[in-house]
Amino acid sequence: MEGNHEKARVRLCYLCNQRRAALKRPKTLEQICRECFYEVFEEEIHQVIVKNQLFKPGERIAIGASGGKDSTVLAYVLSELNRRHNYGLDLFLLSVDEGITGYRDDSLETVKRNELQYGLPLKIVSYKDLYGWTMDEIVKTIGLKNNCTFCGVFRRQALDRGAALLKVDKLVTGHNADDIAETVLLNILRGDIARLSRCTSITTGEDGPIPRCKPFKYTYEKEIVMYAYFKRLDYFSTECIYSPNAYRGFAREFIKDLERMRPRAILDIIKSGEDFRISTSTKMPEQGICERCGYISSQKWCKACVLLEGLNKGLPKLGIGRSRGLDNNHRKDVKQSNGTKNIEGKQCGSLDF
Image (cartoon, rainbow, N blue to C red; front, side, top):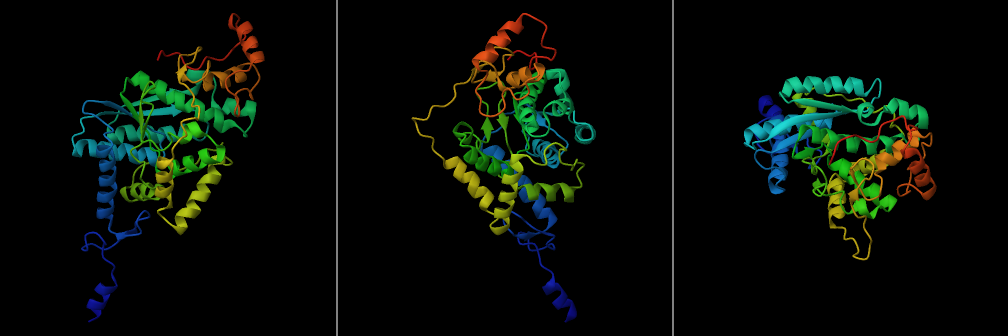
C-alpha cells in the first residue's frame, strides 16, 4: 500500500506520462521530464527554422558567439539540428573582441573551447583592429553614461565585417523572445518608428550586406538557461562590467515582472509588435551607403563613422542621441581635416561592401 501511495505522489511527465517530471517549463508551466524538455525545446526551434525558411542547403552560416548562454546554446542546438535534419549548412563561429579587460577576454576563452567542443571554425574580429579603439579606451574617454551606444553601433558593424571576411550567406544571433519583447517596448518608449517596424522580423538586413536570422525568436530566456544547465554546456555567465545601468535593463526588469504574473506576456508583446502597422504617411529612412567607409547608412556618414570622428577629434558626444549624421559646422571641420593626418584613429573598418 505504501508503495502505491509513493507512486501516486510522484508527479509524472505531462508529455510522456512515463518518466518523473524534473522541471516546470517556463513557457507553458507544464511539468515535464528532462528528455521531453530537450525534445520539445529542439523541435520548436527546428519548426521555426523550417516554417520561416531561414536556411537553404549549402549555405555558409556564421553564428554570433559571445560565450554567453544564448550563443552557446544556439551553436550547440544548430549543430545538432544541422546533423539530425540534414540542413546541409557550413557553420562557423564569429566573435567580436570589444577590448573589455576582465570580461571579453575571459568569455573568448569559452568560445575557443566551444570551437573544439562543437568542431566549428572560429573567427574573431576586434574593435582595436577595425576602429583603432578598445571599449576600455572609449570608457576612459567618455565615461559610463553612453558607452553602450558606442559598443552597440560598433559591434553590429563588426559582426557584418567579420561575416564578410568569412564569406557567409547569413549571420545568426542568439536573440531570444525576452530580448525581442524588450526591444519592442524600448522602441515604443523611444518613439522609434523605423526600428519598431522591423524589430520583430525573424530575418533582417536582406537589403544589406548580410542577412541576419534569429532562430530563438520564440524561445524563452529561462528555457535557454535550463537547457544549458541540464546539458552541462560550457558557457560564460558574467554580465558586462560596463552595462549595469543600461536603459535596456529597466525594460528587462519590467518584462520579467510581467512574465511572473503571466508567462505568455512575452509572446503577446512580440505578437503586438508584429501586428503594428506603420502609417503610409510616415517618412521612413532611406538606406544608402556611408561616404566614408562604404557601410550601409541612411545618412552621408554611418553612425560608427560619426562616433569615431567624435572620439578621434576629442568630441566624444558627437553622434550621441537623436542627431542625424554631422551638423554643418562639423562637416566643415571634417572637410578641412580630410586632407591632413589629424585623425589618429582608423575609419570604421576597411572592407568594401
